Image 1 (cartoon, rainbow, N blue to C red):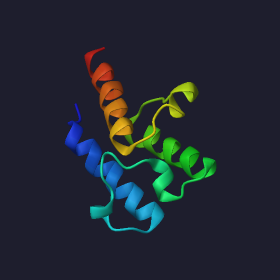
Image 2: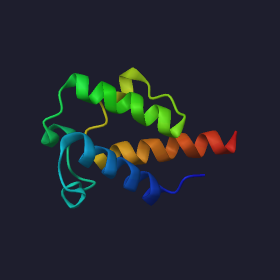
Image 3: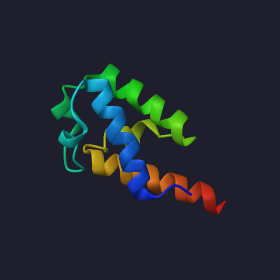
Image 4: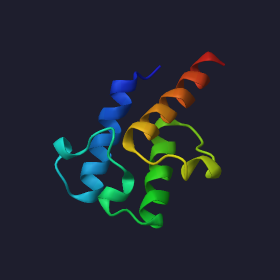
Length: 85
């Protein structure tokens, strides 16, 4: 099972690389809109996260995940559920 801080580190690195910023700028309370991400950016990010963590993020849930921390928590829940099954 992946730990929450490991998920955060992966997401933080991905966002920093994708949007050309330093990892120190990426904080849990930072909204995805702060990255200048458009809907295509978010879609690509979601697809990449689904591949990395072998999960499926429901379309209706995507619009509810506003911040980096919310995304990390959601991925942690999904990976934890998968580990229990």
